Image (cartoon, rainbow, N blue to C red; front, side, top):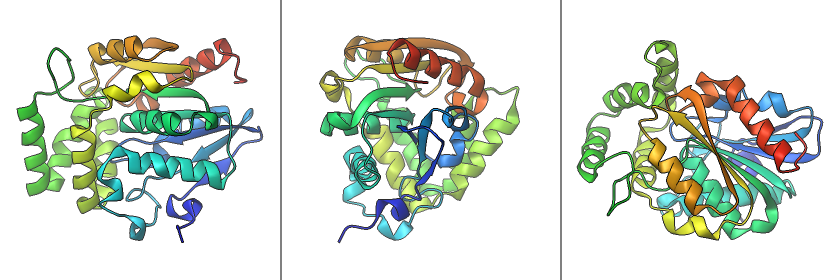
Length: 271
């Protein structure tokens, strides 16, 4: 018997609306990373928050290295949550790697989703044959070697770079603490799955309208990646944010909320 995803993924629901809005956090984080964004949609939506297995309040006993050896395993969890809560017409909001997890879920079960909100997304993090990602293959290998040898040092080094906003060090410190709260073994595996994934071939399969929120000075998902996604995703809308870094849900929640609201309004979804 499969575990109840509501327990496995520490699912929380709130809001007085009926249209579901499902928020998915990025690598090394948990659902608390949406605390400045999700409440803005509670009046008109059924807001659903959850933790990927291995993060936050999820059940670590549910972790399976084979299942979570690709992003498809995480997408399967998203669909499990949708089925358990009987969610349809879902507005999916995914940050960082969860943007591609949402893409995979929407490709597998398009009838469940009405919109995709992709916050700082990337279908591939490594440069490849004319494709401009964020890293060379050698850079990724060095990062993963450091992760294997010293998880705490890796977290302290990478989290501030991911967050950006060096003039607001408290943001990088929060992300570092979040990384350090995750199970190191699961984090190592998830990092490899994240940084070595290539979902470019899945983009043309998406049929629902999508919003790409592209931050300035994003070390993980540079502007060229946002442009690539915009050209590959049919019926997509690209918003270049004033926010800098990779986590506008923390660094610029008001701008993030405003961009999502405008997209929902323009695509005839109640916001």
